[in-house]
Image (tube, rainbow, N blue to C red):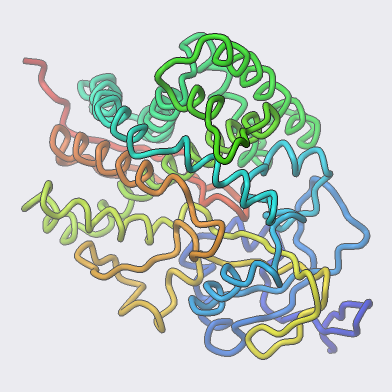
Amino acid sequence: MTAPVDSRLDRPYDEADLSSETFWSSTAAVRERTFADLRARRPVSWHRPVENGLFTDPNDQGFWAVTTYDDLVEVTRRHEDFCSGEGIVFESMPAEILEAGQGFIAMDPPRHTRVRRLLTAAFTPRQMARITERIDANSRAVVDAVAARGEVDLVPEVSAPVPMHNICDMVGVPAEHRRTVAHEAQFAGGWRDERLLAGADPLLRLLEAAEAMRVVSSELITERRARPADDLLSALVTARVDDEELTDAEIVSFFGLLMVAGNDTTRQSISHAILALTENPAQRAWLLEDLDGRLPVAVEELVRWATPIMTFRRTATRDCELGGRRITAGDKVVLFYSSANFDPAAFDRPEQLDLARHPNKHLAFGGGGIHHCLGIQLARRQLASILRELLTRLPDIHVSGEPTYGSGNFFHAVLSLPVRFTPEVAS
């Protein structure tokens, strides 16, 4: 039996299945078996178009899968050969979805250079310092709400509200808009979740969510232009470098990115962290022996283990070579972070959770280059804060039932995670 072939270039598709919903509905451990084979024998491989059930592009021929640590880092640093402006997800998406849902991280120079310079001017250490106390206060409030109950679903009760409150506090989203923002932000990574969609058409619901976010952010931008406050949105409105400033459309786009990516990455990291500590009791005991001293290093390993964003796409701008394979202009090139972060060529015994792992040059925040994550310190700070609060006040918190995972190929999503703990007795 002959292998399926890309009819455009008579290029055979790889035998490994990275394109089906079945593959992405399996567990990380099952997917890792496929990644391990690809890393060892075919680190850059050509695959049939991904099944997405949202938008069919008749011109989509497939994608290159980049699975090793070194090749992934190389692609991120060759932005002239591999651009972001054609989209950062597997799926071919309508232009209006690309602009509304991806924004800044799907820009290329020179526009990306200008916008990142202005965002960096606003996203300062002072902004982080301002929000630090609020991060700890939000962690306390979230744990306060569950501490006496003994068992909860961690995702809606802890993992989701922690980053949403923190991001909204930092940006300056008032209380009356937070429920709307939190609800609409879910659809960017949850358009495969039938429970969330409740029968709605996925594409139309994505567009509705994007419009709802635009309406809220536009209203807040108008308010901040008239009356600046001490928050990130005001800093974005007033940011100026070499007499340039961000347009309202650019701020709206970044607002959406913060609400979606900034929330989802931390939410997934929290859930995966508690799951990992439950499954690795010796590592948990080691951490609890010196929680404050060991937590910063442990956070890096927990983020590697979670790899909350599993894939990012680039598009070849010209014919070139990668990993000994000839890449054709216009080809999709997908970076598999969930494979690279378990590459034994880059990590000693990557299949083992090692909270003392150091150095830990994981790629969960990107592989360097011009698109390296702006929110690294914020993500680390949030995860450390909520873990400290949980493990100090509810030290025996553990997963008590089967997790429910998402079936998407972008976020490493945990939809539900039942946990139990000894209830905290109020003083």
